[in-house]
Amino acid sequence: MSLAENLARVQERIGAACARAGRDPADVTLLAVSKNHPASTVAEAVGLGVTLFGENRIQEAKVKIPASPGRARWHFIGHLQSNKAREAVALFEMIEGLDSLDLAAELQKQAEKQAKTVRVLAEINVAGESSKFGWNPDRFLEQLADLNAFPRLELHGLMTVAPYSADPERARPVFRRLRELRDEAASRLGAPLPVLSMGMSGDLEVAIGEGATVVRVGTALFGPRPKAVVRTEGDGA
Image (cartoon, rainbow, N blue to C red; front, side, top):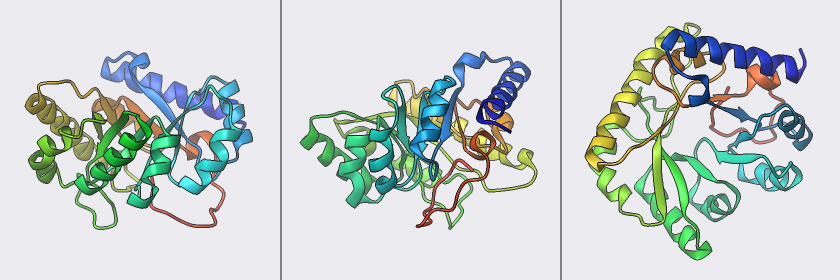
């Protein structure tokens, strides 16, 4: 199928999921996971009305972002190494993979140097998978005040990657727990945390039903992902 047909199908899925959940589709943002796809594919997606894209490799993003249409907006997804923080701050409008206070400190340092404010999502390893990065939920709440103390970081919400399963419903408890954790964190901060980035190609309907405001979609939109030269941990499958 063409990209236009795939996009229409994904939008239909989002709309149907919102209808079932009694939500406005305008409250759910599609993040197109463009990793391993060329800038020409990004340009085609922008021409179809997609504006938000996700990358998880700095080296790839450094080439692709300048070659893509200026209307495209970019989030860094997946695990960010501290030694890549300077470039991530320069390239991306949001870092979705903030997974430790050490990384937060490095992002703060680089943001100070670049005189920027960095929008971030805290990555939570809800299911406690050893293969994934992210805060343990209880540890996150313990460190929330410290995280909120970095003056150049703006915490906008939380993200998670659910364990893979052929049955999307198995992800529901993970998504529900992230929403509950977000609500608890917002209560402690006394400020809204509006963004819940959760759900991918296989389970976006369940995520929307549990309150996702961003769904990260790669395969359902662009088709099978070309092989990368270097494989790194990320999301949006």
